[in-house]
Length: 138
Image 1 (cartoon, rainbow, N blue to C red):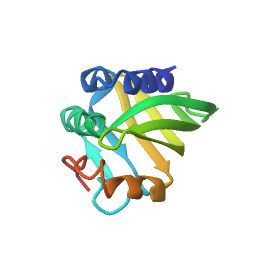
Image 2 (cartoon, one colour):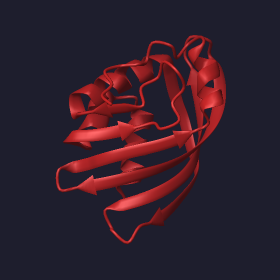
Image 3 (cartoon, one colour):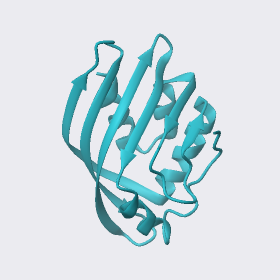
């Protein structure tokens, strides 16, 4: 499944591996992003750049509790999951919960829209995560 492949690529901390799953005009969106964080990143190259900076700031340890709900359109899936991450600068572990929609087209993942607890992320941004805002397009 494309969603699991995407999470596996995130676990690799290799932005090129993430990019290989994406359509050239892919979009990632974070509707609840805190101030200073991008809400939308468009295009494979800009998304790879975003993840290079994100992986420098935090390390994925595990994604757990994956639950999938398929839409009538078989190319879209809704997922709920949890993460364990480490803020690299502080070597501090933290957890968050997510809901996400992933849509796949003929050229790869076209959309990844993720909702997470912005309070957890905002607290980390005060220290280790502040420099991950890459190119954003509204």
